[in-house]
Amino acid sequence: MKKFKLLDTVALLNPVSIERLSLVEPDYTSIKSLPSGQVGTIVEVYEEAEEYHYLVEFADTQGREYAMATLKADELLLLQYELTVA
Image 1 (cartoon, helix red, strand yellow):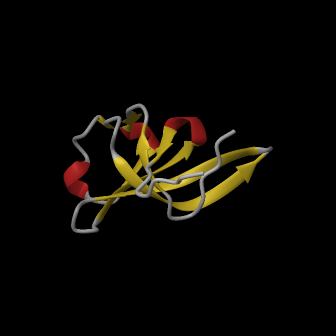
Image 2 (cartoon, helix red, strand yellow):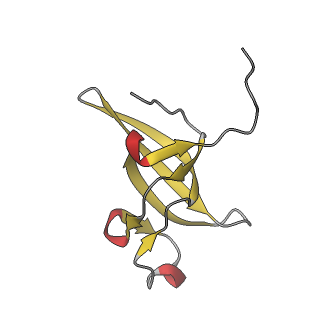
């Protein structure tokens, strides 16, 4: 089971429908979903019955939040900035 931590940068593996989003910016109310590959930051970790859920914040390049969603680990890909050498 994948486990992410606070402030991890993640990308969506599949589109997330607008019904699952909390939109912060009214300009985005016309979207149908966030596309796969959209990048976000984990801002809260929830553990429910041995399963983890993650509150992910999506922001633009200026750092303005436009949406949030609670997602499961299998919906996310951890983005790596550093190469770890064993």
